[in-house]
Image (cartoon, rainbow, N blue to C red; front, side):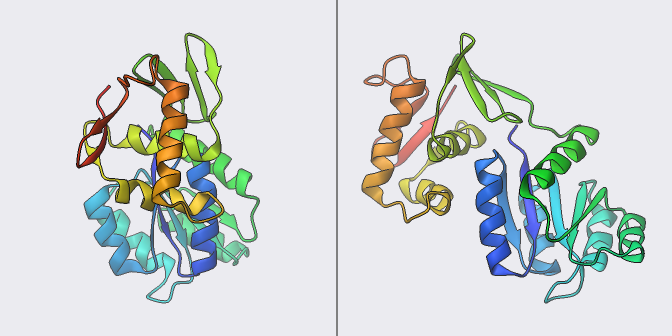
Length: 224
């Protein structure tokens, strides 16, 4: 299972940049700017990990953490510019699983996230799909022991299909998932190109795909 992460942060720039980075690292990311929206998303989507800023426009991270822990057993990592000992102790006493101060190194954050997921028994691990093996932690796709080299956007597109196996994904849904990590807007024609490239790399016969199938008039579906 690909780890779903909920980022609770009210700074749009941090949300945009951190979400893009985490998606490239193999996480599925949704975001909320306050407690009310966060609780709605948790109920609807059941994330495996929460990244929670202490200072929010609506309420604060401590009260949000308490509200989450009352009903859900989801690990929480606090993100904050407050690095003093009192803030750290308060966060951990509220039930947080880890605490990292801003500014942080993104790869250090990812390492801490994966450590928390492993402790909670919710790490992504290895996924099998249509003769392919996907190591979520390393971001590596192999077939028969041979690595298949995917670009960042191809890998992200593949992860989107993996996380929605058996479901039809419209072109609009796919565009919404991948455009923000491409460095520029991904249009409909570009999506067609990337699906073609991905099939050429992961399918045994790209002309007759068995992993990512076209559902005419609706979109695409991964059944394996």
